[in-house]
Image (cartoon, rainbow, N blue to C red; front, side, top):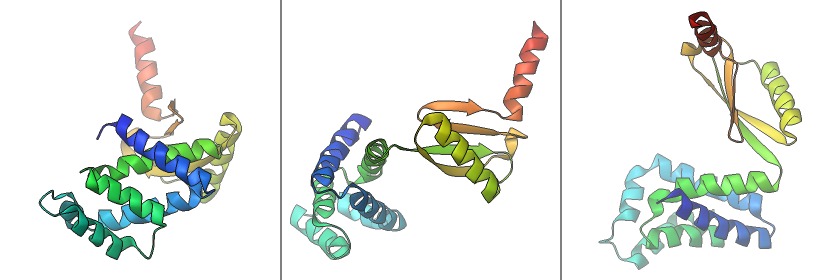
Length: 177
């Protein structure tokens, strides 16, 4: 499924969730469904099989998620399944998350550092980024030892590259001139 189509599905679900004032609850339910499906890739294959009638696939989803997901989120997953797009659930969730974060003035920063950050460093970085971007920023941190030192931060389509590797590259470019 294209990002455009994922966005359309997500926007429709988000509009429904907003009408019911349950945007956060739907996001949490989507995350629960995604985790369960990611842990069971054979189940996704089963749900994607066009040889299995729609009613049977709907029944399987009802058995699996009926007691743990809001009715509308279950219906959303069933709709994706019926249209042969259940594999695109992850893309739809990513688009839904962006809509949610925009609505509540939140952003997620992807932080890649040369060494693991301490909790105090994470808190200080989150506070600094929140002040800079004027919204609440949460961090997703990973380590990449090839950076040599420093970090690279991606937030709201912007890249802040404070890695030693990029600084050394800049020095190298200046020396070439």
